[in-house]
Image 1 (tube, helix red, strand yellow):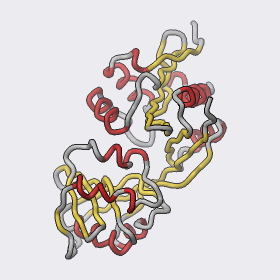
Image 2 (cartoon, one colour):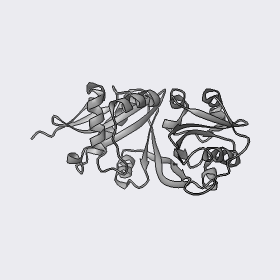
Image 3 (tube, helix red, strand yellow):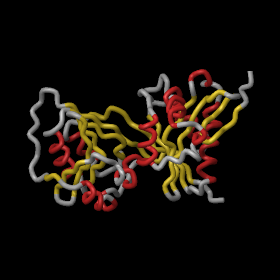
Image 4 (tube, one colour):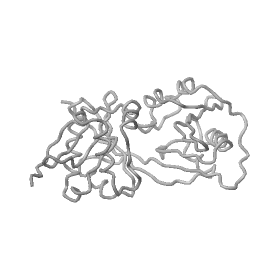
Length: 273
């Protein structure tokens, strides 16, 4: 059987076919990697995914893996990476990440980055072997009301998310993760906002669960007040990819959030050609 390796642009597949490959490449992962064509289409808009630069890895004629590349100016980011179960353990991930980095370089990017769970030792080894280095950690927080009483907070008022995001750059000295950076937030629908002076939180809500999309504050005290305002209206709050070096991080512990997972953000400078 021919298992020679080749690469092709993801754009050659339909979104449905690529979604199926993506889902199969995340089988037995730490979290369900199930995706669909509509989800991919939405992600392409929010995350600036370039399917002509994203890759499908073939072993012979069979799709064996996928890697998503997103581009913003001179920045490139991997938004999904995986090998399907029958082809794992053969070193193919090393070939796939090298090919994706080459796509980023050909696109004129100056830096390539990705996130990986800190407990995913095999993936970390692969990425470090490809030349990436750990730049910082990103934290995942969760809070559940349970039976506890929540006093809420005063001084927070509803505000237009578009107006709040005009303050984004001034309130993010640590820099935001790719999915929470300003280009993604500006095109996301269904956002709400609360303001506390110049500080703010932008969030989405489904039923009783709130997802923090952006928390901008000068210090942890302001951030804690905004979190308490959210706690008064939600049964569950999640926040994904808050930089560990952010000035607001301490507010989560202060308000009873638990760190449920953590990711390394890895990056690689790319020489221009």
